[in-house]
Amino acid sequence: MRALLFSLACFVTIGLNAQLDFKKISDSSYVFTTYQVYKEVRISSHGLLKITSGGVVMIDTPWDTTQFQPLLDSIDRKFHKKVLLVISTHWHEDRTAGLDYYRNKGIATYSTYATKNLCRENNFPQAEFTFEGDTTFNVFNTVFETYYPGAGHSSDNIVVYFPKDRLLVGGCFIKSVEAKDLGNLSDANIGMWRVAVKTLMKKYPKVKTVIPGHQKIAGKSALKHTLKLANEKYKGRKQDKKKAKH
Image (cartoon, rainbow, N blue to C red; front, side):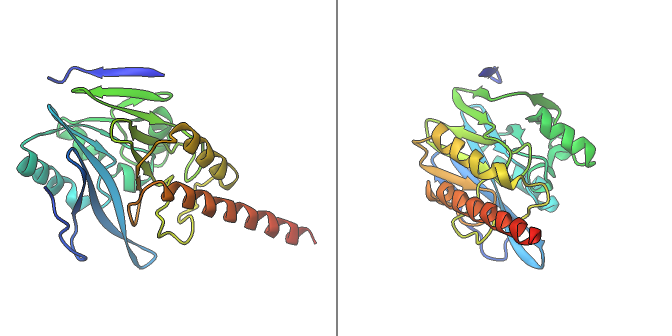
């Protein structure tokens, strides 16, 4: 596992109709939520703010493009700190929409090399910096790691784990316990998703809090629920293929 060392020397939920919501997870961890309409339904999209002694780490960007600057303003007002870097967990717009905006603000933007390539191919904003393989970051003594469990929601989806907090940012690879299905499957690998979830559960058996890409935030149950949904979808497709042959 490669390591990157950076030498860069209470919110409340606003309401059902808010454009930008916050939820405190721990003294140094806050989920920010923006919204978009998908298939005529208003959908939440979560990212994470990790507050360090020298600044803020942002995992994923707002989905709502009108909230790029309001999020920065809120961070500055509440914490009197600047965002140091942003990491996107896969290439879809609910994770990457703000990369160009934040890069132009002088914030370091990161993704895997695979994510950057997919962003380029699909004319989406791209991170300025890339990393390959599972990578450990140390930002003002706040240590966290990126991990690629395998293809699932997309071929490039990664998760971010904060071992001290036992906090996992699952992005769209992990479904909320509220989810009734796997959601957007346009770039999904149904065969591998269930395998990748099992791999993730073995990698981080002590995880306590899981941040899914959308809907309700829960604990380990989100991992088990994602596995259940992936297994059901996989079995359903196998049965459909068998019927098609007869």
